Image (cartoon, rainbow, N blue to C red; front, top):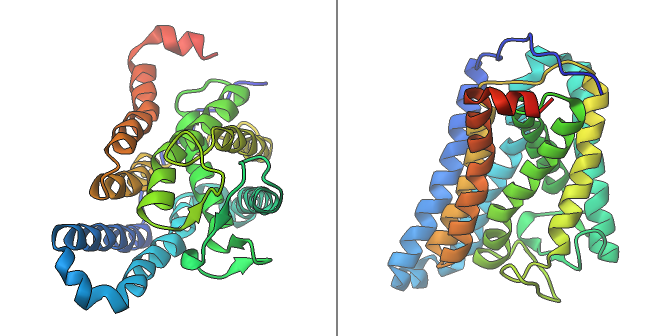
Length: 277
């Protein structure tokens, strides 16, 4: 496939994006602070117990609501409404459909199910927030991969890998620290089966391919992409640490740093520049 166009400048951060991002960060901080407080002072659970579910859902649903909005604000000026809408549809529809197939058949992620903690569900299986999160993280992963890859094919494969690396940090926190979903048959990584990562990679490749076809040679890039990716990894990582999942925290930190290490090496080493072509 032809080499990607690298002529576009990094898109600047808008005032609206800054405001939404601060609310997004606030929801993360509130959730982490509340979790830490209850862990440090478990006796307070007698008072907060009746409100616990609400205290968990409120910041989580705020976080999940803003998750797709931030990439929309990031890329709207570069792409325009039509192209951005196509990318949104690709990420959300393919991601949502894969989740529906996964929760009803066990493929390609293994047997799992969502609890009621993420709110109403599509067809009783997939929370409405989930397809939106597929769009949000896949489009940012595609952006980050484009800073390293020199061809569309390598960007697709690398972007899909970044999605899997995000799940390394995400899954233990969301299935063990909080009961957002569960794997009834268990698995090797904090109850998660290995096939889950295979499914993530395959579905992400399909989504990234759709992005590459839609964008052609246009390079998708925004200065906040790295921060957004890091925040969405740091949130579950800190939850894992707070709830005593130290191994998941360490492994997740290593996984999270991979995209940034590759990006740094790519900038500094001309050998990697040529090898990526």
